[in-house]
Image (spheres, rainbow, N blue to C red):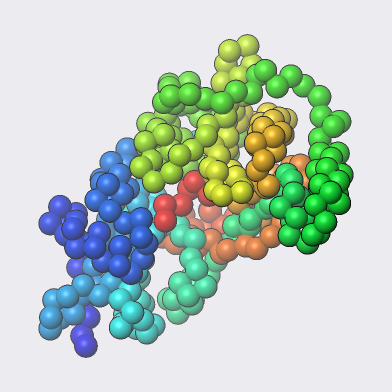
Length: 345
């Protein structure tokens, strides 16, 4: 089988991409998801590549790149986050995947003053290594236990004993938070769309972050508020009526994932946000909080102070024109504020 690659026409190929994605990538694939993710992004439409059989013209693979505006030392530049990479089961040898990924990267790297980032799986990391690209950091998952009710009930059959042990365990989990002082009144659950104050906050905060995706109100409304797949909670911290920071959370089964968070340069603001939402979700019966963050970033110290436990990590890959990669990989000077919300699939 000879495989060729072409750039997709997102109008003509829309239905074929959705059907292929639904069968081989995710059950969530739909026209609604496609329109939102590929076409409605405030920073521009996605780019998509299709691998096809030269003889039958049938689709055998897809790969996509989604635009982001990134602030590097206070200046805005377009970058691309990769996602929705999928190969037909009959073609899952390294060759077709390598061909598709090379075509994608070659097209994107021709753009001036731009770069590409990805959160590859172990299989995709093998492809990057064949291309000669290594990871620049690790995106690590951190978990904060909020309650132990369910774990106790799974191991202790005597109901009254399990109840007593769970109460003691739950109190122990709160022990590190008792010394925290400060009013909770300035942390509230945000209702409705994100207004201009979110864009204004980012403009005030961007100089504190060497590399950070631009979080305008338009972007936050598209990424979280108008997301057709998930329902996010936005928590805000205000001082004298001025927005100083926020956290975006997503509840999944018995846990809550913190997918995005930003504040002015104050660890205390984020610490207060994290502690207040910990208390709230604990009372709601949620068993744990988790979030992902680059292993090289000093904010990891704050997560550990808040009793987040380090778990597994996934590689982060950055590639593009050499002068940009050299800057981004200078971890001492170019620390990336990279959250779970900065990926798209």
